[in-house]
Image (cartoon, rainbow, N blue to C red; front, side):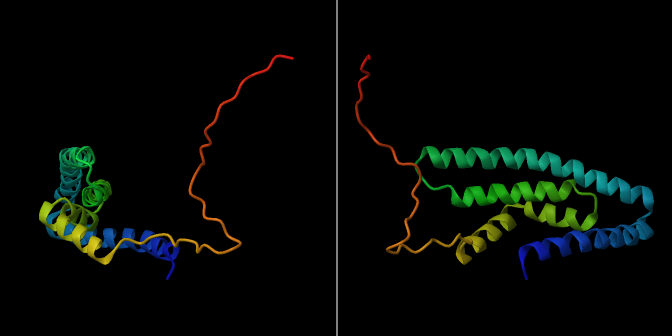
Length: 149
């Protein structure tokens, strides 16, 4: 299944699941406590996102300054960003997944499993006699002089 179909189904089904859970929880604890819970998780998400996001940014900077590849740190920062986004969405299911992504041991387990599986990469074109690999801009060095007419 293509990525666009998965995203379309997710955007179609996720709000329905969220509404179902909000109705169920609202029936158990009441409407006002349910709304308060959703607002509380959004505020908590913003605070955790700010704290952990800055820490992740500092970790990436430190690794770059030390000359190391910040792959895991950047993946952790991406998970933190996605988790914060999920916490800002109204709903309980997205809040649960957002909070799980902000728990450092669970986040590290997710990042390590992603690194072990390997990240998807773009296919590299094969070099043949008629194809040229593009390696970016080419810089030519030289000298020139301007002659007046």
